[in-house]
Length: 115
Image (cartoon, rainbow, N blue to C red):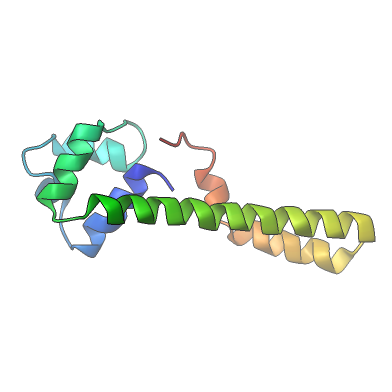
């Protein structure tokens, strides 16, 4: 998960439009690009947006870290399944791996730049 994706999640939970979420801190068009991971946000602007929306910095980065842990856990699970299926020449495990791979949305996100 990227910072932009996490910001989008918080914005949606608060049921705010992008302009409402950023106020006068940055332009809504620039913020839109941050959510889409096309631009990076400065630390000072991120902190201002979090404060503006009454979001704890600690909570925000704790959620950011939790998403990374979940992705790492999924990567390890896939890796273990691949190893087992390979050494056991087990077609059922390969099918399960294929299903897991298809449902793992993080694989699409991991191709994007993370910051």
